[in-house]
Image (cartoon, rainbow, N blue to C red; front, side, top):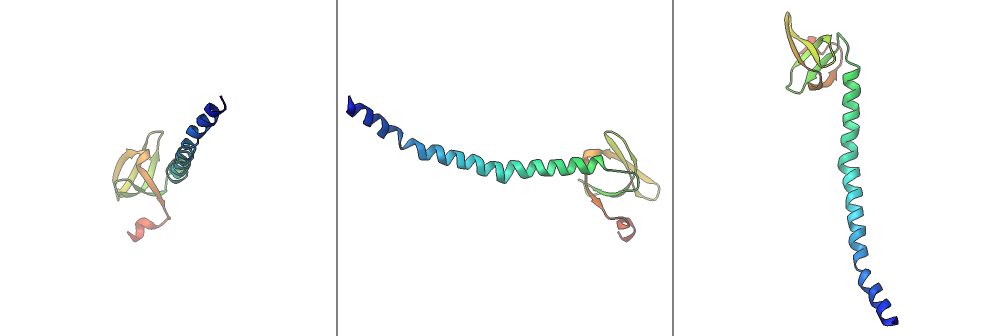
Length: 104
């Protein structure tokens, strides 16, 4: 009877490093990929919630413009004198410093 118990313990021991390796891989995956993505999503959401008329922004497509109207889903940008485009709010990727349009 004593021989069966020691055999059972001996068989389960090699599985422990595999489980430890898997846990380490999951932790690494979380800290290297998931956590930074969540942080970027929060920062983007904060940017979108703070958009105001007069802000100068860049869109995902590379348009540079001044915000003339902010809605729940859409933003109107003035990209040149008298030229306005309406884009989805989520396409705004970056807030630029005031005066960027004058130098561009």
